[in-house]
Amino acid sequence: MHRVRVRVVEDALDANNTIARANRDDFDRHGVAVVNFMGAPGAGKTALLERVLRDLGDVRPGVLEGDVQGSMDADRLAGLHVPVTQLNTGSGFGGECHLDANMVRSAIPDLPLHDIDLLVIENVGNLVCPAEFRVGEDVRVMVHSVTEGEEKPLKYPLMFRACELVLVNKVDLLPHLDYDVDRFLRNLEAVHPGVEHLLVSARTGEGVAAWRDWLAGIARSVAVEAPA
Amino acid sequence: MHRVRVRVVEDALDANNTIARANRDDFDRHGVAVVNFMGAPGAGKTALLERVLRDLGDVRPGVLEGDVQGSMDADRLAGLHVPVTQLNTGSGFGGECHLDANMVRSAIPDLPLHDIDLLVIENVGNLVCPAEFRVGEDVRVMVHSVTEGEEKPLKYPLMFRACELVLVNKVDLLPHLDYDVDRFLRNLEAVHPGVEHLLVSARTGEGVAAWRDWLAGIARSVAVEAPA
Image 1 (cartoon, chains in turn blue, brown):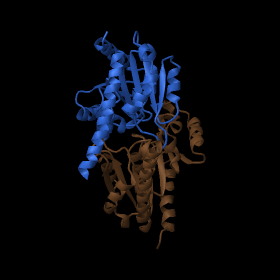
Image 2: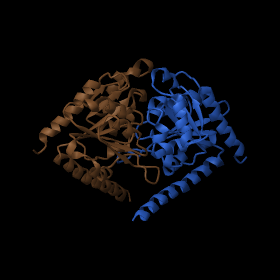
Image 3: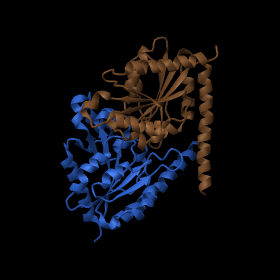
Image 4: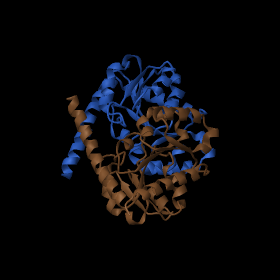
Protein backbone atom coordinates (compact mmCIF):
# COMPACT_ATOMS: atom_id res chain seq x y z
CA MET A 1 0.00 0.00 0.00
CA HIS A 2 2.72 2.42 0.97
CA ARG A 3 4.71 1.64 -2.16
CA VAL A 4 1.67 2.18 -4.36
CA ARG A 5 1.12 5.64 -2.90
CA VAL A 6 4.73 6.67 -3.47
CA ARG A 7 4.55 5.41 -7.02
CA VAL A 8 1.53 7.65 -7.72
CA VAL A 9 3.36 10.70 -6.41
CA GLU A 10 6.44 9.85 -8.45
CA ASP A 11 4.33 9.51 -11.56
CA ALA A 12 2.67 12.87 -10.95
CA LEU A 13 6.07 14.54 -10.61
CA ASP A 14 7.39 12.61 -13.63
CA ALA A 15 4.51 13.92 -15.73
CA ASN A 16 5.20 17.43 -14.48
CA ASN A 17 8.89 17.15 -15.35
CA THR A 18 8.09 15.88 -18.84
CA ILE A 19 5.88 18.90 -19.51
CA ALA A 20 8.43 21.24 -17.90
CA ARG A 21 11.08 19.98 -20.35
CA ALA A 22 8.72 20.66 -23.26
CA ASN A 23 8.16 24.20 -21.96
CA ARG A 24 11.91 24.66 -21.57
CA ASP A 25 12.47 23.56 -25.18
CA ASP A 26 9.95 26.14 -26.40
CA PHE A 27 11.60 28.89 -24.35
CA ASP A 28 15.08 27.84 -25.54
CA ARG A 29 13.98 27.86 -29.18
CA HIS A 30 13.05 31.51 -28.76
CA GLY A 31 16.20 32.36 -26.79
CA VAL A 32 14.08 33.41 -23.81
CA ALA A 33 15.57 33.08 -20.33
CA VAL A 34 12.99 32.05 -17.74
CA VAL A 35 12.95 32.80 -14.02
CA ASN A 36 10.55 31.03 -11.63
CA PHE A 37 9.99 33.73 -8.99
CA MET A 38 8.72 32.46 -5.63
CA GLY A 39 8.09 33.55 -2.06
CA ALA A 40 5.49 33.80 0.72
CA PRO A 41 2.41 36.02 0.33
CA GLY A 42 3.43 39.63 0.86
CA ALA A 43 7.20 39.01 0.69
CA GLY A 44 7.44 41.69 -2.01
CA LYS A 45 7.73 39.74 -5.27
CA THR A 46 5.71 42.17 -7.38
CA ALA A 47 7.35 45.22 -5.79
CA LEU A 48 10.81 43.85 -6.59
CA LEU A 49 9.78 43.34 -10.23
CA GLU A 50 8.33 46.86 -10.44
CA ARG A 51 11.71 48.14 -9.31
CA VAL A 52 13.77 46.55 -12.10
CA LEU A 53 11.72 45.60 -15.18
CA ARG A 54 11.93 49.02 -16.81
CA ASP A 55 15.62 49.20 -16.26
CA LEU A 56 17.16 46.11 -17.87
CA GLY A 57 18.98 47.86 -20.73
CA ASP A 58 18.77 45.85 -23.96
CA VAL A 59 17.00 42.93 -22.24
CA ARG A 60 13.27 42.91 -23.10
CA PRO A 61 11.28 41.41 -20.21
CA GLY A 62 7.84 39.82 -20.00
CA VAL A 63 5.91 38.52 -17.00
CA LEU A 64 3.58 35.58 -16.42
CA GLU A 65 1.57 36.31 -13.27
CA GLY A 66 0.31 33.36 -11.24
CA ASP A 67 -2.48 34.10 -8.77
CA VAL A 68 -5.29 32.13 -7.19
CA GLN A 69 -7.71 34.85 -8.23
CA GLY A 70 -7.77 38.37 -9.68
CA SER A 71 -5.18 40.35 -11.63
CA MET A 72 -4.02 42.97 -9.12
CA ASP A 73 -0.30 42.24 -9.57
CA ALA A 74 -0.62 42.02 -13.36
CA ASP A 75 -2.40 45.39 -13.35
CA ARG A 76 0.43 46.92 -11.29
CA LEU A 77 3.07 45.61 -13.71
CA ALA A 78 1.14 46.52 -16.85
CA GLY A 79 1.64 50.16 -15.82
CA LEU A 80 5.33 49.62 -16.61
CA HIS A 81 4.47 48.92 -20.28
CA VAL A 82 5.90 45.41 -20.00
CA PRO A 83 3.92 42.53 -21.54
CA VAL A 84 2.09 40.74 -18.72
CA THR A 85 0.02 37.55 -19.02
CA GLN A 86 -2.32 36.51 -16.19
CA LEU A 87 -2.69 32.88 -15.12
CA ASN A 88 -5.33 32.16 -12.45
CA THR A 89 -5.27 28.87 -10.53
CA GLY A 90 -8.60 29.36 -8.78
CA SER A 91 -11.09 27.35 -10.86
CA GLY A 92 -13.23 25.20 -8.57
CA PHE A 93 -12.10 24.09 -5.08
CA GLY A 94 -10.25 26.85 -3.23
CA GLY A 95 -7.66 27.27 -5.97
CA GLU A 96 -4.28 25.67 -6.57
CA CYS A 97 -1.56 26.93 -4.24
CA HIS A 98 1.21 26.74 -6.87
CA LEU A 99 1.90 26.77 -10.58
CA ASP A 100 2.78 23.54 -12.33
CA ALA A 101 4.28 22.85 -15.77
CA ASN A 102 0.93 22.14 -17.39
CA MET A 103 -0.59 25.44 -16.23
CA VAL A 104 2.40 27.30 -17.68
CA ARG A 105 2.12 25.23 -20.86
CA SER A 106 -1.50 26.37 -21.28
CA ALA A 107 -0.29 29.99 -21.19
CA ILE A 108 2.50 29.62 -23.77
CA PRO A 109 0.30 30.47 -26.80
CA ASP A 110 -0.47 33.81 -25.13
CA LEU A 111 3.17 34.70 -24.38
CA PRO A 112 4.99 37.09 -26.78
CA LEU A 113 8.07 34.86 -26.96
CA HIS A 114 9.29 36.50 -30.20
CA ASP A 115 9.40 39.91 -28.53
CA ILE A 116 11.06 39.19 -25.19
CA ASP A 117 14.44 37.95 -23.94
CA LEU A 118 13.44 37.28 -20.34
CA LEU A 119 10.26 35.78 -18.89
CA VAL A 120 9.66 36.11 -15.15
CA ILE A 121 7.02 33.70 -13.90
CA GLU A 122 5.66 35.08 -10.63
CA ASN A 123 4.40 32.03 -8.74
CA VAL A 124 1.55 31.89 -6.21
CA GLY A 125 2.60 33.21 -2.79
CA ASN A 126 3.51 30.05 -0.85
CA LEU A 127 6.66 28.58 0.74
CA VAL A 128 5.77 24.90 0.25
CA CYS A 129 4.36 23.54 -3.02
CA PRO A 130 5.81 25.93 -5.65
CA ALA A 131 9.25 24.49 -4.87
CA GLU A 132 8.04 20.99 -5.83
CA PHE A 133 7.03 21.77 -9.41
CA ARG A 134 9.43 22.75 -12.18
CA VAL A 135 7.65 24.80 -14.85
CA GLY A 136 10.39 24.98 -17.52
CA GLU A 137 12.54 27.69 -15.94
CA ASP A 138 16.30 28.25 -16.24
CA VAL A 139 16.65 29.53 -12.68
CA ARG A 140 14.59 29.89 -9.55
CA VAL A 141 14.69 33.00 -7.39
CA MET A 142 12.94 33.32 -4.06
CA VAL A 143 12.07 36.38 -2.00
CA HIS A 144 12.29 36.20 1.78
CA SER A 145 11.11 39.19 3.80
CA VAL A 146 12.95 39.98 7.02
CA THR A 147 9.53 40.46 8.67
CA GLU A 148 9.02 36.67 8.40
CA GLY A 149 11.75 35.77 10.92
CA GLU A 150 15.24 34.25 10.68
CA GLU A 151 14.16 30.63 11.16
CA LYS A 152 12.27 30.27 7.87
CA PRO A 153 15.00 28.27 6.01
CA LEU A 154 14.80 25.63 8.74
CA LYS A 155 10.99 25.45 8.59
CA TYR A 156 10.63 25.48 4.78
CA PRO A 157 13.93 23.93 3.65
CA LEU A 158 12.83 22.70 0.22
CA MET A 159 11.95 26.23 -0.91
CA PHE A 160 15.27 27.66 0.26
CA ARG A 161 17.12 24.76 -1.40
CA ALA A 162 15.22 25.01 -4.68
CA CYS A 163 16.59 28.36 -5.80
CA GLU A 164 19.75 29.89 -7.25
CA LEU A 165 19.24 33.29 -5.57
CA VAL A 166 17.59 34.43 -2.34
CA LEU A 167 16.46 38.07 -2.22
CA VAL A 168 16.33 39.18 1.42
CA ASN A 169 13.74 41.96 1.17
CA LYS A 170 12.45 44.81 3.39
CA VAL A 171 15.86 45.43 4.97
CA ASP A 172 14.71 49.04 5.54
CA LEU A 173 12.62 47.61 8.42
CA LEU A 174 15.59 46.00 10.22
CA PRO A 175 15.95 48.86 12.76
CA HIS A 176 12.35 48.15 13.87
CA LEU A 177 12.56 44.34 14.07
CA ASP A 178 14.18 41.73 16.31
CA TYR A 179 15.78 40.09 13.27
CA ASP A 180 19.42 39.03 13.13
CA VAL A 181 20.66 38.96 9.50
CA ASP A 182 23.71 36.87 10.44
CA ARG A 183 21.52 34.25 12.09
CA PHE A 184 19.31 34.10 8.98
CA LEU A 185 22.37 33.66 6.77
CA ARG A 186 23.65 30.85 8.99
CA ASN A 187 20.25 29.11 8.70
CA LEU A 188 20.28 29.60 4.93
CA GLU A 189 23.81 28.22 4.64
CA ALA A 190 22.76 25.20 6.72
CA VAL A 191 20.02 24.18 4.27
CA HIS A 192 21.60 25.44 1.01
CA PRO A 193 25.38 25.84 1.28
CA GLY A 194 26.83 28.46 -1.03
CA VAL A 195 23.55 29.82 -2.44
CA GLU A 196 23.75 33.44 -3.57
CA HIS A 197 21.81 36.12 -1.71
CA LEU A 198 21.23 39.87 -1.99
CA LEU A 199 19.98 42.23 0.74
CA VAL A 200 17.37 44.49 -0.84
CA SER A 201 14.55 46.91 -0.13
CA ALA A 202 11.92 47.44 -2.79
CA ARG A 203 10.79 50.45 -0.75
CA THR A 204 14.07 52.37 -0.49
CA GLY A 205 15.85 50.89 -3.50
CA GLU A 206 18.73 49.47 -1.44
CA GLY A 207 20.34 46.58 -3.30
CA VAL A 208 18.02 46.97 -6.28
CA ALA A 209 20.85 47.73 -8.74
CA ALA A 210 22.52 44.43 -7.85
CA TRP A 211 19.22 42.58 -8.30
CA ARG A 212 18.69 44.26 -11.69
CA ASP A 213 22.21 43.32 -12.83
CA TRP A 214 21.75 39.72 -11.69
CA LEU A 215 18.50 39.43 -13.66
CA ALA A 216 19.94 41.03 -16.80
CA GLY A 217 22.96 38.74 -16.52
CA ILE A 218 20.73 35.65 -16.51
CA ALA A 219 18.98 36.85 -19.68
CA ARG A 220 22.29 37.54 -21.44
CA SER A 221 23.87 34.22 -20.46
CA VAL A 222 20.89 32.25 -21.79
CA ALA A 223 20.81 34.32 -25.01
CA VAL A 224 24.46 33.37 -25.66
CA GLU A 225 23.58 29.66 -25.41
CA ALA A 226 20.48 29.92 -27.64
CA PRO A 227 20.63 28.75 -31.28
CA ALA A 228 21.14 31.59 -33.78
CA MET B 1 -14.31 14.17 -18.32
CA HIS B 2 -14.71 17.48 -16.55
CA ARG B 3 -17.55 16.14 -14.42
CA VAL B 4 -15.50 13.13 -13.34
CA ARG B 5 -12.70 15.41 -12.11
CA VAL B 6 -15.05 17.52 -10.05
CA ARG B 7 -16.58 14.41 -8.53
CA VAL B 8 -13.16 13.20 -7.35
CA VAL B 9 -12.47 16.49 -5.62
CA GLU B 10 -15.88 16.46 -3.96
CA ASP B 11 -15.27 12.96 -2.68
CA ALA B 12 -11.89 13.94 -1.25
CA LEU B 13 -13.47 16.87 0.60
CA ASP B 14 -16.39 14.66 1.66
CA ALA B 15 -13.98 12.17 3.23
CA ASN B 16 -12.16 15.01 4.97
CA ASN B 17 -15.43 16.38 6.36
CA THR B 18 -16.45 12.94 7.64
CA ILE B 19 -13.19 12.61 9.55
CA ALA B 20 -13.42 16.22 10.76
CA ARG B 21 -16.84 15.45 12.28
CA ALA B 22 -15.39 12.42 14.06
CA ASN B 23 -12.60 14.60 15.46
CA ARG B 24 -15.14 17.19 16.55
CA ASP B 25 -17.18 14.51 18.37
CA ASP B 26 -14.06 13.44 20.26
CA PHE B 27 -13.24 17.01 21.23
CA ASP B 28 -16.86 17.70 22.26
CA ARG B 29 -16.96 14.58 24.42
CA HIS B 30 -14.05 16.00 26.41
CA GLY B 31 -15.50 19.52 26.51
CA VAL B 32 -12.45 20.84 24.64
CA ALA B 33 -12.88 23.95 22.45
CA VAL B 34 -10.76 23.79 19.30
CA VAL B 35 -9.31 26.68 17.29
CA ASN B 36 -7.83 26.16 13.81
CA PHE B 37 -5.14 28.88 13.72
CA MET B 38 -3.98 29.89 10.25
CA GLY B 39 -1.92 32.51 8.41
CA ALA B 40 0.98 33.04 6.02
CA PRO B 41 4.54 32.03 6.97
CA GLY B 42 5.94 34.61 9.37
CA ALA B 43 2.61 36.34 10.08
CA GLY B 44 3.21 35.84 13.80
CA LYS B 45 1.01 32.88 14.75
CA THR B 46 3.41 31.39 17.29
CA ALA B 47 4.30 34.79 18.76
CA LEU B 48 0.60 35.58 19.30
CA LEU B 49 0.15 32.26 21.11
CA GLU B 50 3.23 32.88 23.27
CA ARG B 51 1.62 36.14 24.34
CA VAL B 52 -1.64 34.68 25.67
CA LEU B 53 -1.40 30.97 26.53
CA ARG B 54 -0.05 31.51 30.05
CA ASP B 55 -2.69 34.08 30.83
CA LEU B 56 -6.07 32.43 30.18
CA GLY B 57 -7.26 32.28 33.82
CA ASP B 58 -9.09 29.02 34.55
CA VAL B 59 -8.90 27.88 30.90
CA ARG B 60 -6.25 25.17 30.45
CA PRO B 61 -4.78 25.35 26.93
CA GLY B 62 -2.96 22.83 24.76
CA VAL B 63 -1.39 23.21 21.33
CA LEU B 64 -1.11 20.95 18.29
CA GLU B 65 1.72 22.31 16.12
CA GLY B 66 1.56 21.66 12.38
CA ASP B 67 4.81 22.11 10.48
CA VAL B 68 6.31 20.71 7.30
CA GLN B 69 9.46 19.86 9.23
CA GLY B 70 11.10 20.44 12.61
CA SER B 71 9.71 21.45 15.98
CA MET B 72 10.95 25.03 16.40
CA ASP B 73 7.52 26.49 17.20
CA ALA B 74 6.65 23.60 19.51
CA ASP B 75 9.95 24.11 21.34
CA ARG B 76 9.16 27.82 21.77
CA LEU B 77 5.72 27.07 23.21
CA ALA B 78 6.91 24.23 25.45
CA GLY B 79 8.86 26.86 27.38
CA LEU B 80 5.48 28.18 28.53
CA HIS B 81 4.76 24.84 30.29
CA VAL B 82 1.74 24.25 28.09
CA PRO B 83 1.22 20.75 26.60
CA VAL B 84 2.38 20.86 22.98
CA THR B 85 2.11 18.04 20.42
CA GLN B 86 4.08 18.19 17.17
CA LEU B 87 2.58 17.07 13.86
CA ASN B 88 4.95 17.10 10.85
CA THR B 89 3.55 16.96 7.32
CA GLY B 90 6.88 16.48 5.57
CA SER B 91 7.11 12.73 4.91
CA GLY B 92 8.19 12.12 1.30
CA PHE B 93 7.63 14.68 -1.47
CA GLY B 94 8.23 18.26 -0.32
CA GLY B 95 5.71 17.99 2.51
CA GLU B 96 2.02 18.80 2.73
CA CYS B 97 1.23 22.52 2.74
CA HIS B 98 -1.73 22.19 5.13
CA LEU B 99 -3.24 20.04 7.85
CA ASP B 100 -6.26 17.87 7.04
CA ALA B 101 -8.71 16.06 9.29
CA ASN B 102 -6.94 12.72 9.00
CA MET B 103 -3.57 14.15 10.05
CA VAL B 104 -5.23 15.68 13.12
CA ARG B 105 -7.04 12.38 13.78
CA SER B 106 -3.70 10.57 13.85
CA ALA B 107 -2.53 12.96 16.60
CA ILE B 108 -5.60 12.60 18.85
CA PRO B 109 -4.22 9.64 20.88
CA ASP B 110 -1.28 11.88 21.83
CA LEU B 111 -3.38 14.84 22.94
CA PRO B 112 -4.06 15.30 26.69
CA LEU B 113 -7.79 15.92 26.13
CA HIS B 114 -8.67 15.13 29.78
CA ASP B 115 -6.38 17.88 31.01
CA ILE B 116 -7.18 20.80 28.71
CA ASP B 117 -10.19 23.01 27.92
CA LEU B 118 -8.84 24.62 24.76
CA LEU B 119 -6.84 23.14 21.90
CA VAL B 120 -5.17 25.53 19.45
CA ILE B 121 -4.16 23.80 16.22
CA GLU B 122 -1.45 25.91 14.60
CA ASN B 123 -1.71 25.12 10.89
CA VAL B 124 1.11 25.17 8.31
CA GLY B 125 1.97 28.74 7.20
CA ASN B 126 -0.03 29.14 3.96
CA LEU B 127 -2.89 31.36 2.73
CA VAL B 128 -4.42 28.86 0.29
CA CYS B 129 -4.96 25.20 1.19
CA PRO B 130 -5.45 25.28 4.99
CA ALA B 131 -8.74 27.11 4.40
CA GLU B 132 -10.03 24.18 2.33
CA PHE B 133 -9.75 21.50 5.01
CA ARG B 134 -11.80 21.40 8.21
CA VAL B 135 -9.97 19.48 10.93
CA GLY B 136 -12.70 19.27 13.60
CA GLU B 137 -12.42 22.81 14.97
CA ASP B 138 -15.11 24.97 16.57
CA VAL B 139 -13.72 28.21 15.14
CA ARG B 140 -11.06 29.36 12.72
CA VAL B 141 -8.78 32.32 13.41
CA MET B 142 -6.34 33.76 10.91
CA VAL B 143 -3.38 36.06 11.40
CA HIS B 144 -2.65 38.72 8.78
CA SER B 145 0.52 40.79 9.16
CA VAL B 146 0.40 44.40 8.02
CA THR B 147 3.76 43.82 6.33
CA GLU B 148 1.94 41.64 3.76
CA GLY B 149 -0.02 44.51 2.18
CA GLU B 150 -3.67 45.63 2.23
CA GLU B 151 -4.76 43.69 -0.87
CA LYS B 152 -4.37 40.20 0.60
CA PRO B 153 -8.14 39.58 1.21
CA LEU B 154 -8.76 40.14 -2.51
CA LYS B 155 -5.92 37.80 -3.54
CA TYR B 156 -6.66 34.99 -1.06
CA PRO B 157 -10.42 35.40 -0.48
CA LEU B 158 -11.18 31.86 0.70
CA MET B 159 -8.78 32.18 3.65
CA PHE B 160 -10.23 35.51 4.75
CA ARG B 161 -13.78 34.09 4.38
CA ALA B 162 -13.03 30.87 6.25
CA CYS B 163 -12.49 32.39 9.68
CA GLU B 164 -14.45 33.87 12.54
CA LEU B 165 -11.68 36.26 13.62
CA VAL B 166 -8.87 38.08 11.77
CA LEU B 167 -5.90 39.17 13.88
CA VAL B 168 -4.18 42.10 12.16
CA ASN B 169 -0.67 41.72 13.57
CA LYS B 170 2.56 43.79 13.68
CA VAL B 171 0.68 47.10 13.94
CA ASP B 172 3.78 48.48 15.72
CA LEU B 173 5.37 48.63 12.24
CA LEU B 174 2.62 50.82 10.73
CA PRO B 175 4.65 54.07 11.06
CA HIS B 176 7.35 52.48 8.87
CA LEU B 177 5.08 51.01 6.17
CA ASP B 178 2.93 52.30 3.30
CA TYR B 179 -0.07 50.37 4.65
CA ASP B 180 -3.54 51.86 4.99
CA VAL B 181 -5.52 50.03 7.72
CA ASP B 182 -8.83 51.46 6.48
CA ARG B 183 -8.16 50.17 2.97
CA PHE B 184 -7.38 46.71 4.36
CA LEU B 185 -10.60 46.72 6.40
CA ARG B 186 -12.62 47.69 3.30
CA ASN B 187 -11.02 44.80 1.38
CA LEU B 188 -11.76 42.44 4.28
CA GLU B 189 -15.38 43.63 4.48
CA ALA B 190 -15.73 43.09 0.71
CA VAL B 191 -14.83 39.40 0.92
CA HIS B 192 -16.22 38.61 4.42
CA PRO B 193 -18.85 41.13 5.54
CA GLY B 194 -19.10 41.55 9.29
CA VAL B 195 -16.15 39.33 10.28
CA GLU B 196 -14.55 40.29 13.59
CA HIS B 197 -11.02 41.67 13.66
CA LEU B 198 -8.51 42.84 16.25
CA LEU B 199 -5.48 45.08 15.70
CA VAL B 200 -2.59 43.53 17.62
CA SER B 201 1.16 43.51 18.05
CA ALA B 202 2.81 40.44 19.50
CA ARG B 203 5.94 42.57 19.88
CA THR B 204 4.56 45.50 21.92
CA GLY B 205 1.51 43.76 23.42
CA GLU B 206 -0.98 46.15 21.84
CA GLY B 207 -4.39 44.47 21.51
CA VAL B 208 -3.14 41.30 23.17
CA ALA B 209 -5.57 41.56 26.11
CA ALA B 210 -8.52 41.62 23.71
CA TRP B 211 -7.12 38.58 21.83
CA ARG B 212 -6.65 36.72 25.12
CA ASP B 213 -10.22 37.51 26.22
CA TRP B 214 -11.61 36.41 22.85
CA LEU B 215 -9.77 33.08 23.09
CA ALA B 216 -10.81 32.46 26.71
CA GLY B 217 -14.40 33.32 25.76
CA ILE B 218 -14.41 30.66 23.03
CA ALA B 219 -13.21 28.04 25.52
CA ARG B 220 -15.86 29.00 28.09
CA SER B 221 -18.74 29.06 25.58
CA VAL B 222 -17.88 25.56 24.33
CA ALA B 223 -17.45 24.23 27.89
CA VAL B 224 -20.99 25.39 28.73
CA GLU B 225 -22.38 23.37 25.80
CA ALA B 226 -20.41 20.21 26.64
CA PRO B 227 -22.13 17.26 28.35
CA ALA B 228 -21.59 17.10 32.13
